[in-house]
Every structure is written in C-alpha cells, then in structure tokens.
Amino acid sequence: MKTQYQKAWFFVLPVLLLVAFNALIPMMTVVNYSVQETFGNNLFFWEGLGWFEKLLHSERFHAALGRQFLFTGLILAIEVPLGIIIALSMPRSGFWVPVCLVTMALPMLIPWNVVGAMWNIFTLPDIGLLGYLMNTTLGIDYDMTQNPFAAWATIITMDVWHWTSLVVLLSYAGLVSIPDAYYQAAKIDGASSWAVFRYIQLPKMKQVLTIAILLRFMDSFNIYTEVFVLTGGGPGNSTTLLSIDLVKIALGQFDLGPAAAMSLIYFAITLLVSWLFYTLMTKDDT
Amino acid sequence: MRKRYLIPLVYILFLMLPIYWLVAMSFKTTGEILSGFSLFPQTWTFDNYRVIFTDPTWYWGYINSIAYVSLNTVISLTVALPAAYAFSRYRFLGDKQLFFWLLTNRMAPAAVFALPFFQLYSAVGLFDTYLAVALAHCLFNIPLSVWILEGFMSGVPKELDETAYVDGYSFPRFFTTIFLPSIKAGVGVAAFFCFMFSWVELLLAKTLTAVYAKPIAATMTKTASSAGYELGLLAAAGTLTIIPGAIVIYFVRNHIAKGFALGRV
Image (cartoon, rainbow over all chains, first blue to last red; front, side, top):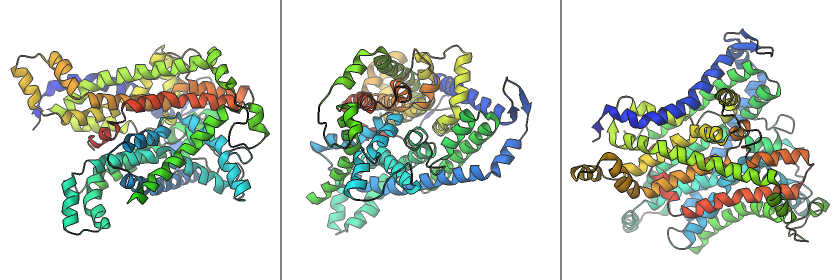
C-alpha cells in the first residue's frame, strides 16, 4: 500500500530532534546519577549498581510500589466499566450530545494542582460541601487528614471525577462509529441487549478501549500533583504513592543517586506493563 | 427508554459539584468561608476577582501560562504535521520503531525528569523563558499530535495526493492549499489536546520558571503558603483557570470524539 521512500526521514527529523533533546539528554543525566553517590559540592563518586540493589531490597520502596499498584488497579477497575456504562447510556444525536461532551470534558481541562486544591476545600470536614454533608448531615466520621481509609476513598473519588470522562469520550467515539444496519440486523435476529453489547458494541470499542486503558494506566501510574496537593502523602505514609516518594527522596533529601535509580526502575515498570497491556489487547488482531 | 438518561445526568451532577463549590467559594469573603458552612454565598463579593485583575503578580501568571501554552501548540503542530504525513503515506527504515518510541515518551513520569530538565534548560540558557516550558512540553505533546494527525491523514485517500501531482502542484503548495484544509478537523483536535496537556501540566512548568514565565498555577501555590490561607482568593484564581479550557473545548465539541476514534494503536 504505502510507498517505500527513505527520504521521508527528512519529514520526521524535526520531531526526532525535538523529542530526543527532551527525552535522551535528561534520561542520560538520570542514568549518570543512578550509578554515583554525591555529598554535595558537585562531588560525585562511583557507586556502580549499589543503589539498584539496595532499592530492590528496600521495604520503603516495596510499600510505595504496592500502594501505586493498588491505586492504579482500583482506578482501572472503576473507571473503565463506569466509563463504558455512561457512554452506552448517552444520547447518540441531538442537542444534548455537545452539552454532555463539553461538561464531561471540563474536569480534564483543570490544571492538576487546582484539581487537588479544589478537592481539598471540597472535603474539609467543617466548611467543605462533601466533608460537611458526610459529617453533619449523614453523621459519618469523615476526615481524610486523620483517617487513611478516608484519604484513600478521597483520592480514588478524585481520580474517578477527573479522568472517567476520558474513557467515556473514547468509548462514545467507538460507539457512534457503529452503522445503524448492525443494530437493525441484531433486532431482526432478536438479540438481547447483552448480546448486542457483547458481539457488536464491545468489539467495535476494542481499539479505543485499548487506547483508553493504556492512557489511564500510564497517567494513573505516574500521578503526582493531584494527590500531593490533596493529601501530601498522608496521613502518615498511607497515600505516599511511588512518585510522591520519589520526589521526597530527590528534592526533599537531595539523595540524587537513589532517586535516579528509583526513576529508572519506575520507568522500566511502566514500560513493561504498558507493553504487556498492549500485546494482550492487540494479539487477536493479526 | 428515557430512564437510561439518568446515568449521564447523575454523572454530570457529580462532576459539577466540586466545580460548583469552587465557584461558590470564590464569591464569598474569606471571613464567611472560615466562619462556617453555607451552601450559597451570603454576601456576594467580587473582591477576590478584583485582586486578581489588579495585582500584576496574579494577572501576569495568566498571561505567562497562555503564552507558553500557545507557543507549545504552534511548535508541536508545525513539526508534527510533516512527520504525521510521512508516517501515513510512506514506509521507511525504522518507521514502526520510531512511532512506538515516540509514544513511550508519555510513560516517563514527569517527577523523574524535573531535575534533569532544570539542569538542561539552565545549561542552554533558556531557564525562566516561555520557550523553555513550550519546548519541554513538546516531550509529550509532539507524540500525541503525530498520533492524532496520522489517524486523520490516513483517512484521506492517497488518490488526492496523486491527482494533485498530476495536475502540476508542487509538494508545499499541495500540502498547504489542498491537504491541510481536508484535515482541518484533525488539526483542531490535535491543537486542543496540545493546549489541554500543556495547560494542566504544572510540575515541569514550575521547575523551569522562576519569575518571568511563572505559570498561574504556580502563583497559586506560592500565595497559599505566604499569605496564610486566603481561600476565597485561591478559589477565584482556580475558577479562572477553568475558563480557557472551557472556551477551547467549546470550539472543538463536534470533533473531539472523532479525534481519538481515528487514532491507530
């Protein structure tokens, strides 16, 4: 189909240079740090793979990684089905479609630290709408600065609020591309609505769902700003996700070596899991 | 049948609640906010907004943010357009590997890159300029633009190119007068996503700026710590950060769903 044309490289060159400048140089800096020890004053000493070894045996790293996987797992388990259900029940045409799309996309366009700050004032027990309703009206003891469970419930709810719309928009895009003839055929065959979903809608949504799951995985696995602004990783260490721990080590304690080693392991895990998702979800295509 | 519309309705209500609370709070005085719970502002005040529009440290934050976001959108689209064309029309050595490598750049946690980025942009003398933030955001916006544009371009039949060449069009003239207009929805969608991701990103923007290019969102964090806890002011500033996004999304509302459906995996 496509023409073989090696000079097409010149079209790609600007992109390659710009992205490489931003990706490769910082990456090499990180690799460089990860094998050295510093005591400040720009003095560096060779450390070899010591940091990696220490990290892989560190309780703190395991705990943060565990919390990160728990967070991402919960996010995917809630947002993907919820997004599909909402997309299925949205109107397909008419005046309300753009209204739905615009209002649903709104949370995604709010700067991430504003999202954190917004949820902070929303959940304050005495003057926040949610905090006040929970504590005073419903009588549930809810204070996310004290109770780890409340803190987890809050960061999960915040992320569901923030990003479910991405899954909705993508699934919806897949749904509206299904021709009417498919539904008419299903109606003639007397297919149940479950059968319509399972054999017509789901296969048509598969490609966009792959994108949705990949994007949601990458972004929730790398989440930093929103959770940091909302809980600061607390109470205690209960919501200290991997990225928050990383920034604590890198900028709080200025331990560049361990932080760099941790970044590389972090990146490798993200890459590996994304690749697994990608191969699993596209293997039937070929 | 009407019942199923309850689901999106409830969902939208859930989305609007925290936003309502932010907006309501921005019209309250700090005294009213701290004195106790009230569902609506008891005494409406526009003081919070007045402070933002008259204090240069506040309104320059907005100008800075909009400046680097626009610059980033222009740079990303300019370099992504020819690249997406190459990916959609030609086969060349390493094209698939390159495409996947571009996408992996979305996976690097920004927290990882913050310090090296600071050193890199200080070394090349761009620290605290619009260009620094705009270039840094290219890291994730260029791959996304290439991906979206490639999808739209593959939807244009190749015969269009061939007919144009037979008719004697040069490549640049064909690209700008025939090809670009036929994928303008795609350009709009890509621009929207560039705007969106550059607008909401803060970690890199904050790391790469100090005074002259400081984004509005960073101004907010500074104020929160220095001036005690001026919730009303913060709420007003937060409300204003929603508006540019709302305007941009209104323009692409009919294309936004299509934008992703066309992207290839």
